[in-house]
Length: 359
Image (cartoon, rainbow, N blue to C red; front, top):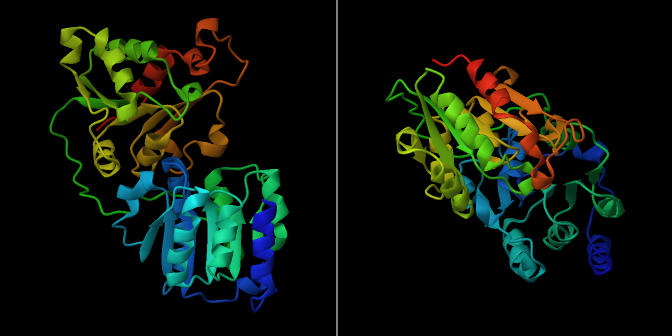
């Protein structure tokens, strides 16, 4: 951190126009803008309203995205960006990142989600004069004198609103909170069956956010015994294949005839297309939830440790049911101490699904 600050300080000392504050920046036009969003899928989707607002504010600007490799198939062919640079957030890869940035000659950097202080360091070394940064911890506040504007960790609202608030310093609109998928889609959602397709996202980024497999099994049996024609679709990453195996192991052959497993079989772009076909997605707080929200696919989302006011569905509230149990509100069985979402019952989720109007 200290070395990074020294380098940034030297860069700014020799750069013209050091006095760059947001009072001036609102009135400037930029031809080259770099946006950093180098973390998880959900984080990137939360950033899309702000990115779209920046595009609207600067319609002639070249916008370069610095992305994580994991989101590559979602952004590599996007018409939103003139170029996409991939960064693994490691110090060893900074020289290559700086070289690629310098080729684009960025005038403005918007750091929506990236690793501090290396993000500020590399954009400073690229020659970028104006830097906006979204800060998530108190340590980042020490970078305040090295950037044009910084948002603080005290912001108590949805992450989407947080990002829009930051870019509003540029004069960008902050009213449209809808997320977007930045690539073209087939957009051919057609029902090939009268079955209602209920998708289960079995995993999450951490165990704390995972609904236990036995709860998904209980829900599956409630669906199958309801008298309606339900089909269950299982989704998840290759690392979550063991969850699908555990789920299917205790289901009967007849039940398995009404289950389709896509776990580990879809890349990110294919996952987007598949989620668009579902009637409803049951999930914890994880990336596919935010894909479904962006696609206007109904969801039932489960929150215990996370706060849906910060990361839950924000747009189209009529499409989504959030089931939230506050920590400590219900007793967590000791066997599931690391999976507190277990306190949400299958019947609660079933009731939420039954309350939905399916076409």
